Image 1 (cartoon, rainbow, N blue to C red):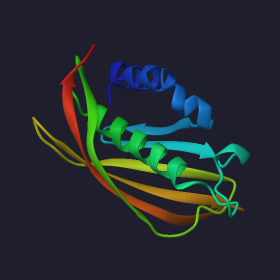
Image 2: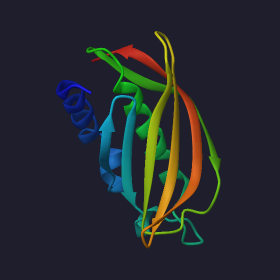
Image 3: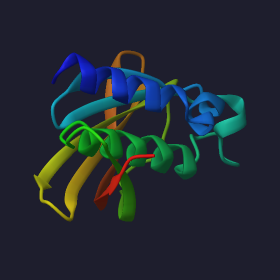
Length: 140
C-alpha cells in the first residue's frame, strides 16, 4: 500500500465520530486488508454484559470498508451498499478486533468480508463473520 493511500485511510478514520465514540483504533493496514480494534466499554455492552452486536457490526463494517478503500484509485471513496452479519458467539472479553478484507474488487462493486474476534486474556474468539458489498464513488 502506498504512503498516500495509508494517509488517506488514517485521515478518513480520524474523521469518523462513531469510531471515536466507540474508542476504536486502526491496527494493521495493507492493500486489501485493514484491522480495527475497539474496547468493550461499559457504554457499548448489552443487557447481559457482552459487547453489543452494534459494536461488532460497526467495527466490522468499517474494517471491510477501509479494506475496500485501500484498493481504490485516488479520488474515490466507498459506500456500503449491503452488509450481512452472522453472530457466532457472544462478544465476551475486553476488546474486539475486526479484520476486513477485499474478496473481489471490481469497477462497480467491491465484495468484502470481515471477521470479528473478542479478545479476552490473550485469547481470540471468533464472534462474527460479515460479508458485504461496497460501491466506489467519486470522493468529495
